[in-house]
Amino acid sequence: MKRKIVKIDEEKCDGCGLCIDACHEGALRLVDGKARLVSDSYCDGLGDCLPECPMGAITLEEREAAPFDEEAVKKLQALREKSQQETAGDPCCMEEGEEEFLSCGCAATQARILQKEDLPQKVADPFQAAEKRGGSQLRQWPCQIKLVPVNAPFLSNAHLLIAADCTAFAYANLHDDFMRNKITLVGCPKLDNVDYAEKLTAILKTHEIKSITVLKMEVPCCEGLLRFVKKAMLDSGVMIPWQVVTINTRGEIVE
Image 1: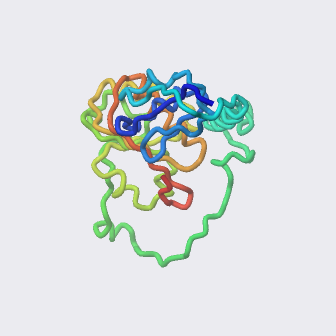
Image 2: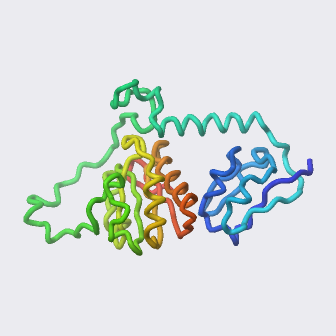
């Protein structure tokens, strides 16, 4: 059938991702740093995403397309809602009044053994051999998002690395590959129980941030970290270069 449907100009798209949140049907997704239409059947053609695009990369066109499938959208929304509940601390994962997560099957709490080859210890005495190793790339203190003051002077003109806590232990070369020449802010959206978006919005409004790199794990709860950053950019009206890097539990970059 011929109907109205969104069209994305990839030359104009800067990959900010604001249109993703604006599309309630879940028809849009970031692929290789560009917004893409996942499926014609997910797009209702109303264009709610158009005013959210700061680059004017999204328009409506009339063309042959599959009809809008409301049932398929409902199923997709149910999956997204389940993921968001896990991120926020779903009641299925936490008993009322308790902070300990239960063994309910959430991806972030599933216990597993990661097979690694046993290697000889490289350093017999880490204190004596410290000068032989690469130094820490942490450029400021504190580094926890919850503790960093909004008016901290080290935030001015900074390139930010916003990293999930677990990435420091999963990815072996975090300091040299990601922290070098950046201000590092770390946190866990599942355990901290804080809306980081409010503080990140204030930071973006107060300081001239040069860029943001989001480093997260490949588990549903880490998506919360990405949502906070996108919301902060939207609420602050500050659009700067940003990227997302995803690490799996084996310590490999997967996206």
